[in-house]
Amino acid sequence: MPRAPKFKVRKEEGRNFPWTVPVPKELKDMGIRRLYFETQREAAAHGIELQGIWQRRLREREVRASLPPGVSLEQVVADYNERRRESLRSVAFEHALEAFLESRAGHSKRTRDDIRMMGRAFGYWREDETTLGAFDGLQLAEITSAHIQKAVEPMTWNSRRKWRNLLGTMFTWCAKSQRAWCSANPAPDVEIGQRPERDDDGEVAILSTRQVRRLLQAATETTNPRGKDLVPFFVISLWAGGRTNEVRGVCWEDINWDENHVRLKATKQGRSKIRYVALPDCAMAWLRPYRELEGKITPQRNFIGKGLYVQCRRRAGFGLEDEDSPEWVENYCRHTFASNHLAHYSDITALMVAMNHETTKMLFAHYQRAQTEVRAAEFYDIWPADEEEEHGKVVDGAF
Image 1 (cartoon, rainbow, N blue to C red):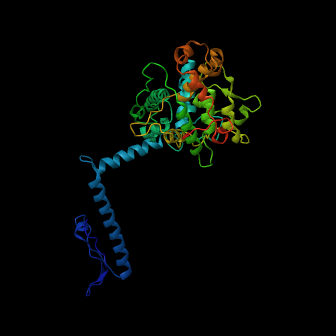
Image 2: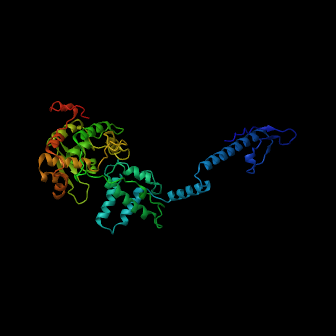
Image 3: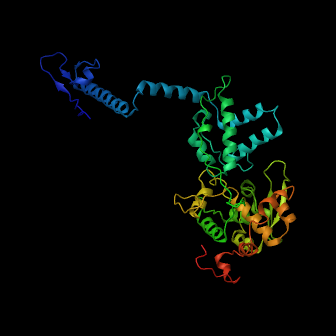
């Protein structure tokens, strides 16, 4: 780095305008010549101006040196200006989503329903006004694959694949010349990972009793800024078999403390909207400390955006870089519920209602021999630490 000149004011006797500031060679090469002034103050002001020019020149050299080979500063400036112009003529994600849905008026109901579900999955079109959209504050042209990657990370593999493909279709539609709300489609660059495999014997993967305990312990330690933890979310997921979006929609008034059941509202199209699922005594014991709360049982604002769901799973030992750490399988809690329910109660019809299925075919195919009666009994005997002794459960290293 060249040494910075001082730009000191000097006086040269014998001139009508004696005050001047020496000009360094680099600035002379730019065509800047030495000037003379009548007063010292005018010369000092000129020195400050020369110093600013020198600093800008120095920053320009540093920027040019940091550019990749073959890329000029002029190209970078041109790209920035183009992105700026694109951003100014772009629109917010929610506006683009509404326009995309409107453009599909002649398409099938399922297509339009999928667009609505995608909007809700990313935090838009929800009844809860406190929910933040995944792309709030960004114009469509400013959304990158990194933004989408962060938004879909907590989702299941099927959801990541589905919404990535649908987002790709939407971005392509938005980029067409009559709209030109964006110039690039970032969706194809989003990584969704490998599809989770089932167990080697073809049965669905389920959580062990020990893994359930670790998960519940991690849920007590994973909180949003207001101190709201994830225990109720996982309790309803594990012992009522709710889908993620169904459980996120459960309010405390949906839990009947006298009859021990929870009201679930289906989010999947073509299913009955409301169902009531009985909760075992151990599940009610986990929920009882929260009985006086109101509103949603699950943190809404920070569940996806801040990754509480992912943080809790990792705290429980899932999806870590350690080679012994198991991967989190989509619908883990739902599969665990169905397998243990069928093995414990041997009531396929009750399970069909609880899972909101229309037939028992899929339940027989996946869950008939997925769990043993002994292990299922252990699952329905998982109590909070302060109630284990009361129920005769003293487990060393339970968590």
